[in-house]
Picture 1: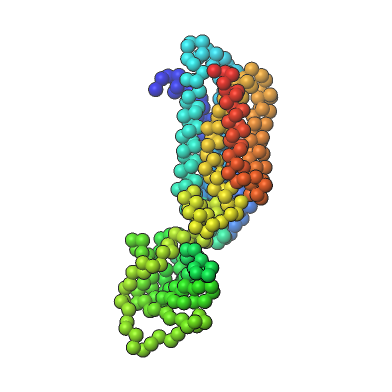
Picture 2: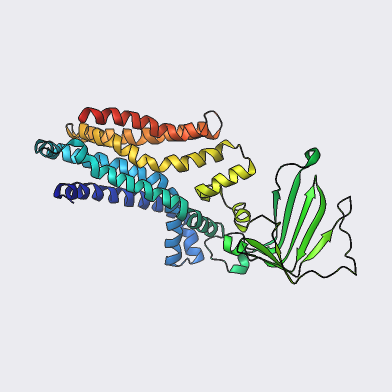
Length: 375
């Protein structure tokens, strides 16, 4: 790595880390104003509090990280331009594109980290933090997290002949639906029934159920028969006994799908969002906007850096006050545009994909035009 590259990275990473820490600290302080008394009353251990704020901060990083890239780039470019360092570097024969490559590299890394965080960290960490808050910051024992008589209903394929709606309903005596692992091993009996147009036609009842290797296994299963009115028929005394352990290949509902029914939408991974929207044939604008923003949001790190590089250089030739004002205007205008388009996209006044993409597109066009003038 060339000396000049190390110097530019050091000049940029310092403000970037400071901005990230500052945004998170401000958010945590405001949250403590609301929840500090509850922490004290519940005697929350320090590690539990740290884990809680880790999940909360991870959830909002898709907003904090691009904002930090914007302010850090503006400040760094202002410093380099104000002290004529950029002029000296370019006079030595280094192209402007070469000088700005470290900034784009860091922005690209932050984009990747933000996406990975939203996809793999937020779904579990954010859900855990939200459930802890709902429980008044008291960690519940496994049996306390179980829901009694938990029910899950799923439409099965397309409507049958004559437009009949086919649904399958699962009834769990007790299960913890907070994670896929606990959903895979419910405690107590399980009953599954299938209905056509609201009339039960067949079902299974088991003393215990487990989901192993992609298949539901029923312990001591009993076949349930119904009459034409959907009333359960008594089991025949001479009916042959079923196997003590039976794989239920026809039951395609997965513990993950059941678990997601209990999870807030913002804690879905991108893959889960897409599969859920397609499986349920959901047209809700707010859900589709969140799906598209999950894709476009992290790329704001690169787009906002492209805009901030020429903007920061222009402020370097001006007073500090003007530089601060421009930084604030750039910061609030980007997020004001994002929030306005979020409102329009979630209410169906703008296509969700366009509403999620447009802020990045606007700043990409402005930033590209400004950047091209300096190359």
